[in-house]
Amino acid sequence: MEHFYITLLLLFVSFVTLSLFVLFYKHRSNYSADNLPPGRPGLPFVGETLEFLSTGWKGHPEKFIFDRMAKYSSQVFKTNILGEPAAVFCGVACNKFLFSNENKLVTAWWPSSVDKIFPSSLQTSSKEESKKMRKLLPQFLKPEALQRYIGIMDAIANEHFASQWENKEQVLVFPLAKRYTFWLACRLFLSIEDPHHVSKFEEPFHLLASGIISLPIDLPRTPFNRAIKASNFIRKELLKVIKQRKVDLSEGKASPTQDILSHMLLTSDENGQFMTEVDIADKILGLLIGGHDTASAACTFIVKYLAELPHIYELVYKEQMEIAKSKSPGESLSWDDVQKMKYSWNVACEVLRLAPPLQGAFREAINDFIFNGFYIPKGWKLYWSANSTHRNPEYFSEPLKFNPTRFEGKGPAPYTFVPFGGGPRMCPGKEYARLEILVFMHNIVKRFKWKKLVADEKIIVDPMPMPAKGLPVLLYPYKS
Image (tube, rainbow, N blue to C red):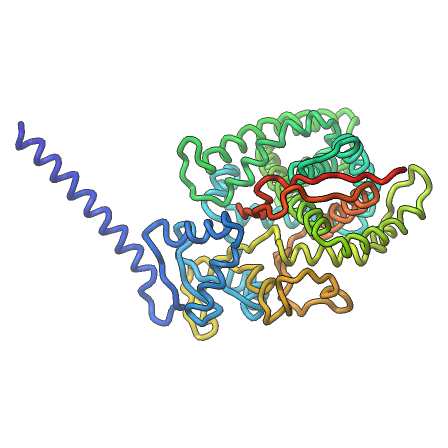
């Protein structure tokens, strides 16, 4: 019997040793080609993922990028992120190359965690699902359509500030900004107006957003596991909304053009096929994340910088009050009013430069190619970083200084300012985000001045920037 257990132990050790050997061999073989970019692959499976993520957790996501650019004296370097062999592309030439070669040499790529959190995309792929979405969105996100939303946005902003900010001495800005942008997304995409119905989704959406770009380890209490559970909960709730909308459409209680949900239910593809309810739920899920998470981060950092820079606040206040004084009591903002908010948008752009909600994005090489003299194999993942240009003195003088005048006239050079990406995959919601940010700025500065309660509050990037304590501020309301 003793020999039997020894034999089992030896077999187990041999199996583990062989598995580790295969893992190391496979890991090394991904980097065996000649003339690859400089860099190091890190450990098998994990690669340099922990370093990549931890610099964000410490509030300096650009450190991962700039340290390696300096170490290898290169704007392209190899690594391994989220278990994938990857090349990181940094700078204007790299941005231009990736954005100009979409669907020629590169295509969009998301980590496997995305496909697992959005299970209907397993029927095709998250890339195919994204292409479908880009065909559906223009009708609702083009300027003519967005003009209809200004009044609704302003009404929601007024109600939000009246119920959540006014008559309070201090507030936590980040959760309130998320509530504002999420309420807008629910109203404009799904026609959900009841604040209690909206609040039901808030915490699950936070868990979902923070777990999408994480190590795909489905164990209890991991961010990935929490994101899957949150996704399942939200999907069930959305399916209830979708089923009710189908009934309302059939009974004439809902309009075919009232929002994106109605459009999705009534639009077929080139083969005459309609999307399933689960497909629609997943697409709405993605839209709600994109429609509120990035803008809420931008709104939060606008409040942060305006608190720190009173001279900038005064100029924004002056511009917004000129617009406010031109309105009669109860009159909503109009499209023309928003077009007058030029300085305010320059301030918002400078915030997006210093604290981009989208730190970067992945592509996948669909062919072997040579760039900057380096060989990039087919199948490698490519990561472009907004901070590689936004915080680079080569493209922005004194890059850490807050200076909205950078955006006057022609503004920054092409491919240097990329908070919304670029090329065919530029964020289709860019103009929508501009409107919800400017409506937020108008409504907050005409009501309050404010002061930060934590002077040196730490910033965490996971995967979007956020103040560690939620940005508590003391409010000083204007007398009406």
